[in-house]
Amino acid sequence: MSYPFISPIIFKGGIAGLLSAALIVFASNPSASQEPTDATRAAPEDPEAPAIADWQTEPHLQIVPRTAEESARIAGIMAPPKDFSKPEKFEQNPAGAATTRYMAIADAFSQFSPNMPFTSEMDFKLGNGIFRKLWIGAPSSTKGSDGLGPLYNARACQNCHIKDGRGHMPEGPDDSRVSAFLRLSIPGGDPQPAIPDYIPTSPDPVYGGQLQDLSLEGYLAEARMGISWTDIPVMLADGETVTLRAPEYSVDNPAYDAPHDGLMLSARVAPQMIGLGLLETVPVTDILENADPEDADGDGISGRPQIVWSTEYDRPMLGRFGHKAGNATIHEQSASAFAGDMGLSTPMFPDPSGECSDAQADCRRAPAGQEPGIRDGLEVDQESLDLVTFYSRNLAVPERRNIDDPQVLRGKEIAYSIGCTSCHNPKFVTHRLIGQPEQSFQLIWPYTDMLLHDMGEGLADNRPESRATGQEWRTAPLWGISLNKQVTGVESYLHDGRARTLLEAILWHGGEAQASRDAVISLPSEDRNALLRWLESL
Image 1 (cartoon, rainbow, N blue to C red):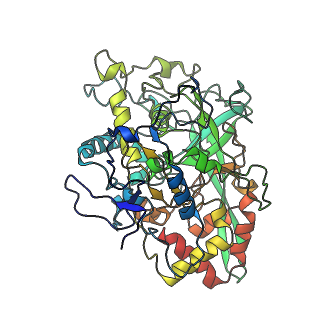
Image 2 (tube, helix red, strand yellow; image 1 turned 90 degrees about the vertical axis):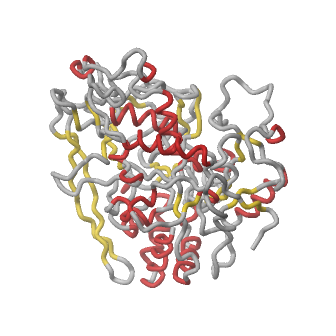
Image 3 (spheres, rainbow, N blue to C red; image 1 turned 60 degrees about the horizontal axis):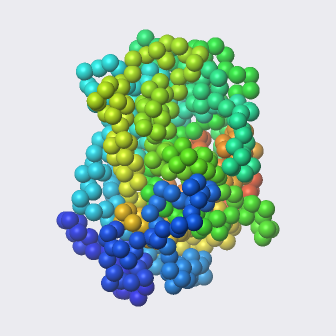
């Protein structure tokens, strides 16, 4: 089957054959070269562009502007379906040509984008090696891996993002906390006039912006994340009872004096890594089309864009990554994790003490893994940071399963009818790009609008982040959600992993999602099972 507005990708460098009609790149001229060196596709320079643009610009991308014809064609493709008796075209491949085949193994999230050039595979594998590498304290004879901590949350990126999947909360007092941690802040701080509705906060003066619960030998870990659970029964319309568990978090056994009286805590588990590069290349204008901060249409949904200050570009930018969309780019998200989670210096955050505060004198005096002539005098040099970024950008999304199953199609229809897709926006088309063929002009199905939504008091952490309030969260992408247990061995959903099943996750929704949540409670069991079956197909 062929479609006149689509050119199929032919894979080079030993990747055999075509994937399917759904692994596509839209092309305004199917005969034109896709190479970044093609001068006819280069984005024109704007001589009047300001030195520091407003937050709606995208300095991290080399964009080829869409033609009017492309924009019109995309608008038609974005229209919601009217026929739920069959799948939509290309729906089986949620990441377009960056979709990988489904594999029933724990490494399902660890595959590279199939449309990645063969010449880039080594960069992906090297990035994977750094992502998995266990760091050690300095000084060490292992010059390529020292500089950890001395206070930290994990020794490797992979320890938090288990098999590139989600983290989880500890099940008991002796269970590992390595894939979960506490964000910290106190009210007040410097204003940020470049960000509208910015809510000033500051790190805790002793414990910084996140709690490090591990340390090198000879140093005291900051504290231990305390957690207790309270059961909350929820009765469904058909008489079934679902038990939710409500967490309460604390800073236990603080080693460096008491935290600030106004300390705000927010528990987080590491999110899954697949499809990040595609989310990074969704046009800002397309995201803003779904924003309705004043709920002008009266549907109860009022998504707002997150705006954050980018250290990388020294300007405000649209926040895309993290549970409250606190980072604008994968590059900065990676550098932040090296600093906060492992105490490793990078070109973006060169302090070798990581999050150690002035009150933690022993930590700040600790030997650093920085030596002249080795790794640019840093613990994570520019090349290593770029490789980890490339790896994170190109982790492929597995293909959908059972998309033509009648129960799955019925569940999809229910998801649309009760308003799930008002926030979990099904699809976007990414920018056409120079130098990023894996992400360029792909039809993707992430089921997120990438906006902030008030999720109600039940999910509130009461801790602002940039302009996100204590009840707002970025809509989480749903692609790959059903593979959570297969990849990590544990079902864990929502920002802090409190939900142990997809149904529990739904029942925690409140605020703007309250009506959809109540509709799920009222569904007959047959329709509720169909909705869950649809989620399990994603």
